[in-house]
Amino acid sequence: MVNLIWLLMLAIGIVVSALNGHIENVTTSAMKAAELGVEVAIELIGVMSLWLGIMRLAEEAGLIKGIARLFGPAIRRLFPSLRPDSPAMGAIIMNLSANILGLGNAATPFGLKAMQELQKENPTPEVASPAMITFLALNTSCITLIPATIIGVRLKANSVNPTEIIGTTIVATGTAMFAAIVVDYFIRRRRGT
Image (cartoon, rainbow, N blue to C red):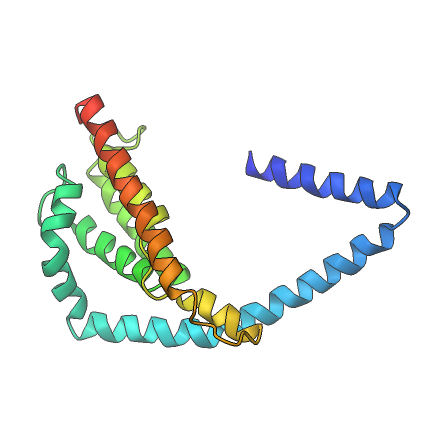
């Protein structure tokens, strides 16, 4: 569905440009956007490498296990159907930790691993389990304390104060995560899962 929406937006843009006699703007804009995309991606490699390295050090130093022990009771309440020793728990905590630090790209492998582990424990593999649904809700709405990727983009754009978004990011993502948890809880209660 998303691909269809993008296709329609592109087609409408091209048709409108052609009708207004500015079809050359489509090619120029496409080339500039492609160039900018490559520039931003290359410059973000440094920021992502730094934070991925910090995450790796934290994992090797046992900090992630400490975080798991600290947040374990809350995570177990959010995922009551999972065993306390489930391999999915570690992947879920790593994913949420990366999201909390604003490392969406670093969170992806942990998210995929968590879903694989959750699928192994799913009694009906053709349907998403309640734990999978809860994880997806948390993953997409997770609170972000340090929006490292966005700060990196703002640095690239020569922002005067690239970190000024931290406060509003915490409020917005905290509100989103709270809403996701509440909605997930009430839907689970309603369905009895």
